[in-house]
Image 1 (cartoon, rainbow, N blue to C red):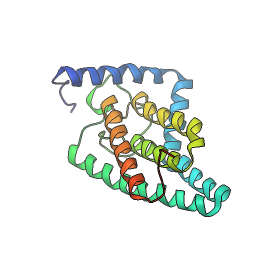
Image 2 (spheres, rainbow, N blue to C red; image 1 turned 90 degrees about the vertical axis):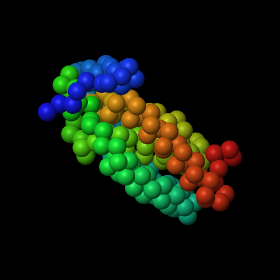
Image 3 (cartoon, rainbow, N blue to C red; image 1 turned 60 degrees about the vertical axis):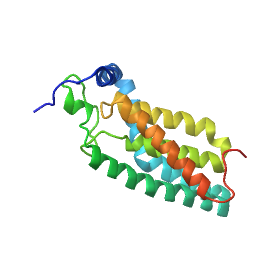
Image 4 (cartoon, one colour; image 1 turned 30 degrees about the horizontal axis):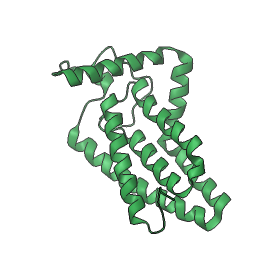
Length: 183
Protein backbone atom coordinates (compact mmCIF):
# COMPACT_ATOMS: atom_id res chain seq x y z
CA UNK A 1 0.00 0.00 0.00
CA UNK A 2 1.41 3.36 -1.04
CA UNK A 3 1.28 6.34 1.34
CA UNK A 4 -0.85 9.30 0.32
CA UNK A 5 0.59 12.11 -1.80
CA UNK A 6 2.51 14.96 -0.12
CA UNK A 7 0.42 17.01 2.29
CA UNK A 8 1.99 20.42 1.80
CA UNK A 9 3.80 22.56 -0.74
CA UNK A 10 7.28 21.85 0.65
CA UNK A 11 6.76 18.09 0.48
CA UNK A 12 5.32 18.50 -3.00
CA UNK A 13 8.37 20.43 -4.22
CA UNK A 14 10.67 17.88 -2.57
CA UNK A 15 8.89 15.02 -4.36
CA UNK A 16 8.84 16.99 -7.62
CA UNK A 17 12.60 17.61 -7.56
CA UNK A 18 13.13 13.97 -6.69
CA UNK A 19 11.03 12.85 -9.64
CA UNK A 20 12.88 15.19 -12.04
CA UNK A 21 16.29 13.98 -10.84
CA UNK A 22 15.16 10.35 -10.92
CA UNK A 23 14.31 10.67 -14.61
CA UNK A 24 18.02 11.27 -15.32
CA UNK A 25 18.47 7.61 -14.42
CA UNK A 26 16.55 6.63 -17.55
CA UNK A 27 19.81 7.23 -19.45
CA UNK A 28 21.99 4.18 -18.94
CA UNK A 29 25.27 6.14 -18.81
CA UNK A 30 23.94 8.47 -16.13
CA UNK A 31 22.45 5.58 -14.19
CA UNK A 32 25.69 3.59 -14.39
CA UNK A 33 27.82 6.57 -13.32
CA UNK A 34 25.66 7.33 -10.28
CA UNK A 35 25.36 3.64 -9.35
CA UNK A 36 29.17 3.38 -9.31
CA UNK A 37 29.53 6.59 -7.29
CA UNK A 38 26.90 5.38 -4.84
CA UNK A 39 28.64 2.02 -4.46
CA UNK A 40 31.97 3.74 -3.83
CA UNK A 41 30.18 5.94 -1.28
CA UNK A 42 29.09 2.78 0.60
CA UNK A 43 32.55 2.93 2.17
CA UNK A 44 34.94 1.60 -0.45
CA UNK A 45 36.22 5.05 -1.45
CA UNK A 46 36.72 6.12 2.16
CA UNK A 47 38.51 2.90 3.18
CA UNK A 48 40.87 3.22 0.22
CA UNK A 49 41.48 6.87 1.10
CA UNK A 50 42.33 5.98 4.71
CA UNK A 51 44.70 3.22 3.61
CA UNK A 52 46.35 5.54 1.07
CA UNK A 53 46.86 8.24 3.71
CA UNK A 54 48.66 5.73 5.94
CA UNK A 55 50.83 4.43 3.09
CA UNK A 56 51.71 7.90 1.78
CA UNK A 57 52.01 9.83 5.05
CA UNK A 58 52.88 7.26 7.73
CA UNK A 59 51.97 8.23 11.28
CA UNK A 60 50.33 11.51 10.22
CA UNK A 61 48.21 9.52 7.76
CA UNK A 62 47.38 7.05 10.52
CA UNK A 63 46.28 9.92 12.79
CA UNK A 64 44.10 11.37 10.02
CA UNK A 65 42.64 7.93 9.26
CA UNK A 66 41.86 7.34 12.93
CA UNK A 67 40.12 10.73 13.02
CA UNK A 68 38.09 9.75 9.94
CA UNK A 69 37.22 6.35 11.43
CA UNK A 70 36.11 7.87 14.73
CA UNK A 71 33.96 10.40 12.92
CA UNK A 72 32.53 7.58 10.80
CA UNK A 73 31.48 5.56 13.85
CA UNK A 74 29.64 8.55 15.29
CA UNK A 75 28.06 9.32 11.88
CA UNK A 76 26.87 5.72 11.51
CA UNK A 77 25.33 5.67 14.98
CA UNK A 78 23.66 9.05 14.48
CA UNK A 79 22.15 8.31 11.11
CA UNK A 80 20.83 4.90 12.21
CA UNK A 81 19.15 6.50 15.23
CA UNK A 82 17.63 9.23 13.04
CA UNK A 83 16.33 6.68 10.52
CA UNK A 84 14.67 4.64 13.26
CA UNK A 85 13.16 7.77 14.79
CA UNK A 86 11.86 9.44 11.60
CA UNK A 87 10.94 6.29 9.62
CA UNK A 88 10.44 8.30 6.44
CA UNK A 89 9.64 6.02 3.49
CA UNK A 90 11.97 6.12 0.52
CA UNK A 91 10.74 8.09 -2.53
CA UNK A 92 10.16 5.01 -4.69
CA UNK A 93 8.01 3.54 -1.89
CA UNK A 94 5.89 6.71 -1.71
CA UNK A 95 5.46 7.56 -5.38
CA UNK A 96 4.94 4.97 -8.12
CA UNK A 97 6.49 7.37 -10.66
CA UNK A 98 9.88 7.24 -8.89
CA UNK A 99 12.05 4.26 -9.67
CA UNK A 100 14.77 2.79 -7.45
CA UNK A 101 17.59 2.30 -9.92
CA UNK A 102 19.59 0.27 -7.37
CA UNK A 103 18.56 -1.66 -4.26
CA UNK A 104 18.50 0.38 -1.04
CA UNK A 105 20.62 -0.68 1.92
CA UNK A 106 17.73 -0.22 4.35
CA UNK A 107 14.06 0.70 4.47
CA UNK A 108 14.04 4.39 5.37
CA UNK A 109 15.02 7.60 3.64
CA UNK A 110 15.86 10.29 6.21
CA UNK A 111 18.67 11.23 6.39
CA UNK A 112 20.93 10.05 3.59
CA UNK A 113 23.68 8.08 5.30
CA UNK A 114 25.84 8.14 2.17
CA UNK A 115 25.68 11.93 2.06
CA UNK A 116 26.16 12.37 5.80
CA UNK A 117 29.32 10.24 5.67
CA UNK A 118 30.62 11.82 2.45
CA UNK A 119 30.27 15.33 3.84
CA UNK A 120 31.69 14.51 7.27
CA UNK A 121 34.61 12.53 5.82
CA UNK A 122 35.37 15.22 3.24
CA UNK A 123 35.48 18.01 5.80
CA UNK A 124 37.59 16.03 8.27
CA UNK A 125 39.96 14.84 5.53
CA UNK A 126 40.36 18.41 4.25
CA UNK A 127 41.27 19.59 7.75
CA UNK A 128 44.24 17.20 7.53
CA UNK A 129 44.96 17.38 3.77
CA UNK A 130 43.48 20.51 2.13
CA UNK A 131 45.17 19.62 -1.16
CA UNK A 132 42.63 16.79 -1.57
CA UNK A 133 39.79 19.29 -2.13
CA UNK A 134 39.72 18.87 -5.96
CA UNK A 135 39.12 15.13 -5.47
CA UNK A 136 36.94 15.02 -2.35
CA UNK A 137 34.50 17.90 -2.91
CA UNK A 138 33.30 16.73 -6.35
CA UNK A 139 33.11 13.14 -5.13
CA UNK A 140 31.00 14.10 -2.09
CA UNK A 141 28.72 16.20 -4.31
CA UNK A 142 28.30 13.29 -6.74
CA UNK A 143 27.46 10.95 -3.85
CA UNK A 144 24.75 13.35 -2.67
CA UNK A 145 23.26 13.77 -6.16
CA UNK A 146 23.44 10.02 -6.79
CA UNK A 147 21.10 9.30 -3.91
CA UNK A 148 18.33 11.45 -5.42
CA UNK A 149 18.91 10.39 -9.04
CA UNK A 150 18.79 6.73 -8.01
CA UNK A 151 15.39 7.28 -6.34
CA UNK A 152 16.60 6.42 -2.86
CA UNK A 153 16.34 9.85 -1.21
CA UNK A 154 14.48 13.10 -1.43
CA UNK A 155 16.52 16.29 -1.87
CA UNK A 156 15.59 17.24 1.72
CA UNK A 157 17.18 13.98 2.97
CA UNK A 158 20.42 14.97 1.24
CA UNK A 159 20.30 18.60 2.42
CA UNK A 160 19.65 17.54 6.01
CA UNK A 161 22.46 14.97 5.81
CA UNK A 162 24.77 17.69 4.48
CA UNK A 163 23.96 19.90 7.47
CA UNK A 164 24.31 17.03 9.95
CA UNK A 165 27.56 15.82 8.38
CA UNK A 166 28.97 19.36 8.40
CA UNK A 167 28.06 19.88 12.05
CA UNK A 168 29.47 16.49 13.02
CA UNK A 169 32.72 17.18 11.14
CA UNK A 170 33.01 20.61 12.74
CA UNK A 171 32.57 19.12 16.20
CA UNK A 172 35.02 16.33 15.40
CA UNK A 173 37.65 18.80 14.19
CA UNK A 174 37.10 21.02 17.22
CA UNK A 175 37.66 18.04 19.54
CA UNK A 176 41.00 16.98 18.00
CA UNK A 177 43.91 19.18 19.12
CA UNK A 178 46.04 20.63 16.34
CA UNK A 179 43.49 20.03 13.57
CA UNK A 180 41.72 22.94 11.91
CA UNK A 181 40.17 23.92 8.61
CA UNK A 182 41.66 27.39 9.00
CA UNK A 183 45.32 26.41 8.70
